[in-house]
Length: 409
Image (tube, rainbow, N blue to C red; front, side, top):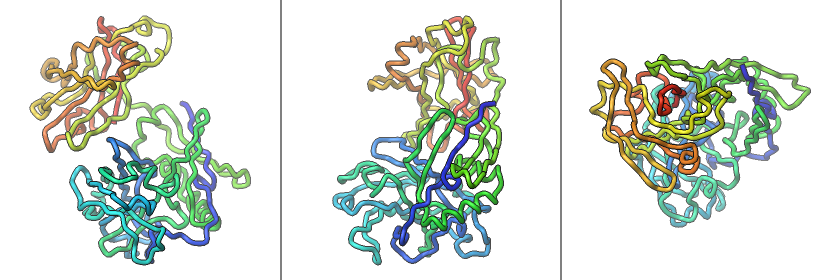
C-alpha cells in the first residue's frame, strides 16, 4: 500500500497575524464549530467563466447542537471580491442545476469603501439534504471573468448565511480555501489563513482531539468512502512543526473492484497504454456527462503493453434505462465531434458498447478525446450506472485480449 502524507502548518493551516477579520463585513456568528454547513476547500471549473462550490453538511461540526446557528437553513453564499469587479458585473447562478436569483456585487452597509462582496441568494438548502449540493457561478460580463480575477488575494473567502442573516465562516478554524498547494513526491503541502496565531494554535489542538480518522478525512476533503484519487494509498497527517510531534494515520483506501466486463481478458489498469480518467465532467445545462481517455506508458512488458490501438469502449450501464439516454458523442480538443448509436450486449449483461473508436496512441495524445453521454431531464449518470458508487468503463484492443477497466466518479 502506498502512503500519501500531508505536511501542513498547524495541522493543515498557516496562522497569519491579523488585527481583525473583516470579511463578510458584518456582525455575525463566524465559527464553523457553530454551524453544520461548510464548503469543500477545493472548487471546480466545469465550464468557461464558471466556478462551483460543493456544500458539506455535518452534525459533528457543530460543537453545541443547541446553538441557534446549528439549527437553521442555508440561504446565501457570499464571496469576498475586489471593488473594481462591481462595475459592469453580470452573472447567473445555480444550485444543483436550478437557477437562483441573479448574483450581485455590492458594498455591505457597514463595510469600508474598498470592501465588496458577491452575493448568491436563494439557495433554499436545509438540513442533511444540503450535503453535496453544488453552487455554481457563471460570469457573463464585467472586467473580472474568473475566480482568480474576482478575489482580492490568491486565497478565496466565502461566507454562508441563513435566511436570518447569521453567517458561518471561520475565525480560528480556517478563513478560506487556498490555491497555495504544492506537491513533492507523495507529500502535499497546503496552506490557508487563520484569524490569528493564537486561534490557529487552538484550532490545531481541537483538530488533534478529533482523532485520526476524522482529522485525516477533514484534511483530505472526504467523509466515509475514499475518493478514487486516493485508491491504493494510505493516508496520514503530520505537522511541519517538529515541536508538535503529531502524526496521525488515517484510513487506507483499497482500490474498488467490479466483475465487469464479463469476458476473459486482461482487466488490469495500465496493461495497455490507454487509460480512462477517474473524474467525470458534467455539463449541467445539457445534462451531459463525459469521461476522458488519455495515454501513458503501460505497466510491465506483457503482450498487452504493446497494443497501440483502442478499438472500443464498454460501460457497465443499466440496459433497462436505455430509453433515457439521448446521445453518445465523441469530443476532441480541436472542436471536432462524432456520434455513436447505442449498442448493447446480451440481455442481463448491462453492457453499453461504444464501437469503432480505432484511436491510436498518437491520436489519443494529440486529440485528448472524451466519450460523452446525454440523458433526458431527471436522469443522471449515477442513475444509469449499475454500480451505486462508480461508473465503470473498459477500453478494448482490436483482439479483445486486453480490457483495462477503470472506475470514475
